[in-house]
Length: 212
Image (cartoon, rainbow, N blue to C red; front, side, top):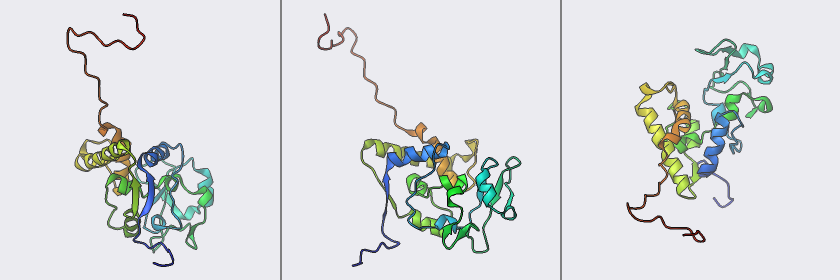
């Protein structure tokens, strides 16, 4: 387009893969939030998503009407879930913006749709807006380390898909699947090369400056 406008088909820069992965791991450990360049996208807020809110998220709970919350299935008392309206929209989304953004749930702070292209996991069929956004992200692979880490993440995703019965957690949806792959990927990294020992009977080479 001659005016330079960004269309919904153009790729979006997702950043350097290793930088993103380190930040994502920090977010999953609760050390930080995800820094997603949403640029006005509300796909995750309008895709019929249930949002978990933990009992320690007091500032969030103070700002979400209790009538919109219900007990979180299979979790201890005090854990609640924020549902969505008849259009699949988060009820805290007002005029296409989060009305509690500074106090949004931890689930929202850590959500990052870049996990899908990173892991190769397909977005659930009932979330087409998230799928359209996710397929546009393009990571930079700057060196062999980036490529090795991406390969490991995708190998972990395949393992989760094919061996769910061996895991302590069974993925409940595509986001959970992708997150498990991120958490498990280090087991799939290539082993570091080890120096081969000198042949028997051969002296070990001395470093410069060493006495003989």
